[in-house]
Length: 431
Image (cartoon, rainbow, N blue to C red; front, side):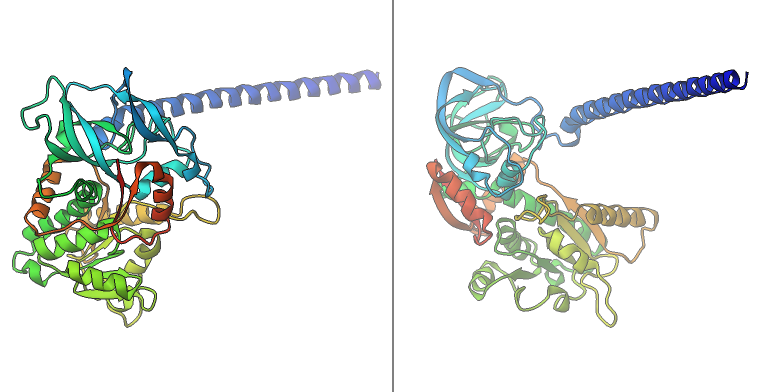
């Protein structure tokens, strides 16, 4: 009898265990379903929202291919894995399908294209296909000649016009490193006859980035510091010899009439930057910028993973880099040119977002606060603004800075050179 009771007790306990296990499986199953639904819905929201959040940066209706026409193009069909072997993915294709002209597009015979760090970062990292479809033609900066107009184009651009443009950089497989490109006429600007195609191609991305950032500063000065002239305002521009830096120095000095300090790595580059308009050269190999710069009106930082924390660091008996309240930190979203030791992009990620949200929140709830202002800067195509920049160049107020020019077939070698980080100004592909 005792044996019978024990067996029945054991059987009941096993049944309870199975019920609990079954319940847990059911709960986990339902949880996974909910997670799957949430991720799917979130993905759909992001995909749907991108065209509205980043209307010109994201090409949500990219051109299709023209099955009857081909062109020469530099392409890659495989994503990198974060290692150093990514330019080997590039292939010169002499029979790549041409893009199909859309109603408001211009078909441009490309004469020159400029390289940018985002190109090789796209190559070396896995990226979702809705952000970077494959195969992909690298490059976003171009100059060339209009050879065809969409049926709904305005009369602004005509056949044989010399033009330059920044193409959308997200959501499209098309790029500038090809014989032809289609670009929405909203993103296109005319190039003066006296300007070379190489010079024109060097400008779109870096100049739009620099001007967008510095115009934020200009607006703030106009609205909040009317009593203080721009000529007495001081700005620190990091990486002055880079593409953005070389344009930002000129715009800050010659258009906004500011006192300009900049960082660089050698006396040779320093002399070149002084010719562009820099007043103070800081050799970062010998001195720290935070030991030199005090109470500046602005910092333009394309290298936040190195300099952001040092910009806001508080030291005893040391004046801050930025002025209280009216100081302005302009953070150009980006990552290190070299991969981190863990094989991932070296960015300031969490620290940057924390800083940005903190500064925005404090300025929102306490408008008179003493902490500096903070903005994140990203670039997007803008033909009207690009036209203004090209006009400044045509008038001799600013000038393009080109380091080297390569043939299209040598694009892999050109990207390898750019990634070394030694270029002063832009690296160009001649098509």
